[in-house]
Length: 124
Ligand code: HEC
Image 1 (cartoon, rainbow, N blue to C red):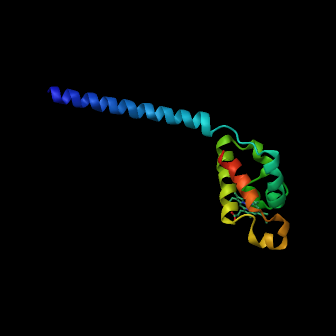
Image 2: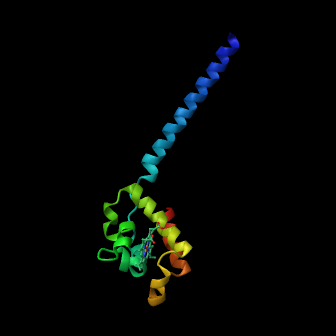
Image 3: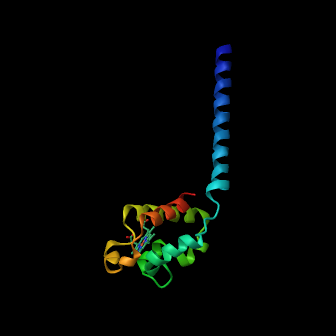
């Protein structure tokens, strides 16, 4: 009988700490990851040059549906964080700007420094 009591005490303690951990992580999400992520001017300058033709208002429909810099400020914090991550991912993998576009517009090629600069912002 006593053994069972000790066990259930431990079980309760475990449940309690899991609950506490859960609360802590919810709190971390609410306070940390959901803070807005504006695009600083120096980052925006690069993005305007290399991506603006398609991803600024008046650009291509399919591109705007995925990412619209003109509406960035209207995105909620979670969406901004996701899009910032996607920006870094697509420029690192070379998916963006699209190769066919780069061929005709060599001035949009991102330098390694520019990629690092953008990804540093995106991971902040
Ligand atoms: C020539 C037009 C064009 C240019 C320039 C361009 N994009 Fe795109 N982008 C698209 C289109 C079209 C899509 C949607 C279709 C797709 O995903 O391939 C897209 C989708 C995306 C997506 C969402 C897709 C995903 O995989 O998450 C991101 C992020 C993105 N672009 C970032 C960029 C960035 C950053 C640049 C500049 C470095 C850029 N794009 C330049 C046309 C463009």
